[in-house]
Image (cartoon, rainbow, N blue to C red; front, side):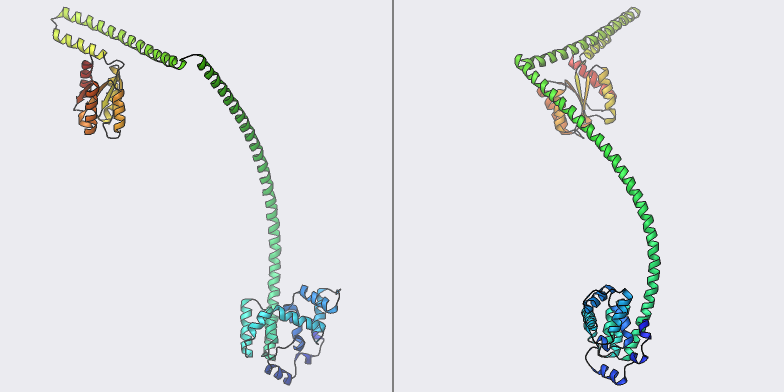
Length: 407
């Protein structure tokens, strides 16, 4: 309740009994100037924001009111006592502002129904429109209006306490916001410095990239010039490519010949040493001429494996290293095919075509691989030895046997 209400006679707050009874029996809503005087202050203060109230007062006085908010409020409350231009403007503004709430309260047929809608509005936290609708409802008698005023008075007290708490919290949040703003500014500064560093690094990388691209263009240009010179040189020298291939073949043949000469010299030294040993043994005791002839034949046969490609088809995977070692000790190149376990038939055909000699371990290969080996060797005339046992000893015997066949 405002101070200006306390100066008015108390009779203004309580309408005559006949007037109150006629109000509750009427179906017309009460107007602002028809409400008890003690309702004007809370209605103006709760239901109309100060900005809206100032515009309405300015419109009512047809000018610009040079008063503060309190004076505007007090003047508007005073004008509500009678019907006039300002009270009419306030009445229309309140009806328009809370038209939906008024429509909801229209279905109430008793004071109890009005109070029930008022309590629902309190529970929902939206009391401004319900306050206006409850006070002006045709079924609102003095008891309903007084109860609504009392409860609105307490709501305002609670709202004031909440406002003070919110203000204190607002000050705390302001301090926290200032601290966070400082921290944010520092983070932004660090971020700006980091961006600057990364920008410099990016410029360096881009410069290096440009230099690398320039070097690549220079190399590509140089390569193009060299290719053009080579093409011109090839055109000026007939059959240059054929001569180059022939020279490469001659170089390879010369290397193989030198290797064979070295191996032949080693074999001659071995043969001379064996001859000396044989002569010594013959001088000491009678010699089995047949055995000596066999040893000499094996030595001669071993020389036939030098620089040959020996293909081993099948065998144990754990013994492949042993097969390779024995083959290379005999002077031959070693190639292996597992006989169809993992290696395909196409690879077998390629290995057979590249091999000079073949050892086929029949106990560890597929039927398809066996027949491919047999058919290829028969068709091409390549020496082939079939070994049943995949042991290293059997492979060694097969190696001696194919050396004798090759001789």
